[in-house]
Image (spheres, one colour):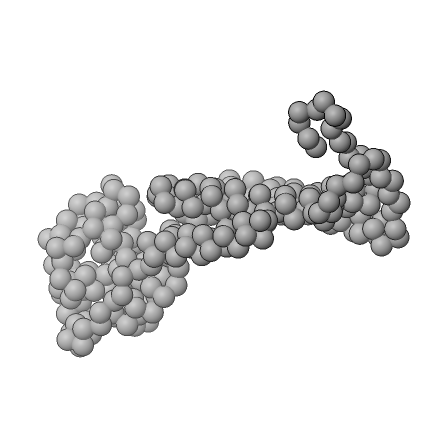
Length: 277
């Protein structure tokens, strides 16, 4: 039964990943040859018109100086990732709505206008091909969301599957550990154990690894805390990895102690007992 639980948990984990990745997968970009052919010629004039008529000027300023919206002038973030500008225009973010009413040529025109104005400059105009290539990567917003312990957009199916996976894995691992530590059959009486050199070495190595991961975890926490003042995103993945390895090595050490260092005792019920052991 422990192996059945673990296999079932693995199957449900695959289903969980499928559901989550399906929701975060970007829509495929259709590359229109006519749009590509006109981007270079139209963006200087059409982009300026759309920037004014669509209301961008009201939030970002006539010269990209910002206001209700972020500063666009001299913004290295958008010039280093031009696809990000296209994504924000099409999908929106925060208080900025999605401009779904714009045509494709208008979206690329205003995006290239922003990317090549007020001190901004990119080597080549943004094209649908670049957007399609950029969407093959995971969006930074998705990575940030996944780095949290409880994502904001997690839904009931994911919660149910994740919880059930953890229950099945816990049951399966406890069952396997029980068979390994105590055997498939329990024999009455006190059972003396003597540690072997290999078991002692394994215990020392396990405790050493636990200490090592504890030091690494503290160093990572200190580094992330220092970077927090500079608005640097903490490395939550490494924090979680070190914390998990600490718990894992301590669990292995506990198992080794139970198996090779701790005397065991198996009780049996007497003739009048009602609760068998």
